[in-house]
Length: 201
Image 1 (cartoon, rainbow, N blue to C red):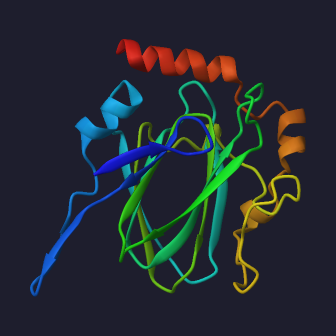
Image 2 (image 1 turned 90 degrees about the vertical axis):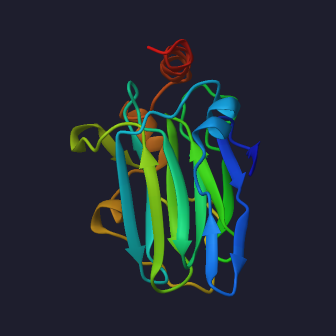
């Protein structure tokens, strides 16, 4: 298992090592010690989610209000998807920057994104599963979304896939509109939260 930081600071790609034979395959898809060593603090596990999506299902860009925010560790046990992380932290040198990785059950990898970062994914195959661990439970009053089709973000959705969005995501504000409304986290809020996590509080 190897872990490296992506172009968006505080997001990490985890290369997993599958072990298989004629009976099937085994993969350690989450190791608390490996992730904690990279982050400088453990990932608090408050909830585990699982979604199944048809090809073309586009979900996000989702994020939670900071504090406390919601860190995510995502893994694709079946199918294939394009996973995107976006820096939504106002004041960040990489504000509005994104990175994208393919998560594929055939070549297993996982993705971690810290509090204050936005998350979106596009299913590239019918029956694609996404399993993710989150640091805080779902709270609809603190959950927000930015349009995954915002031209300013210019996210790398492939032209050969017909996109299907929820009504909520389709009506989501652009990055600029979300910033104007005061919905986005700031670098100061996130830095304070990260320091608290490293201090164990």
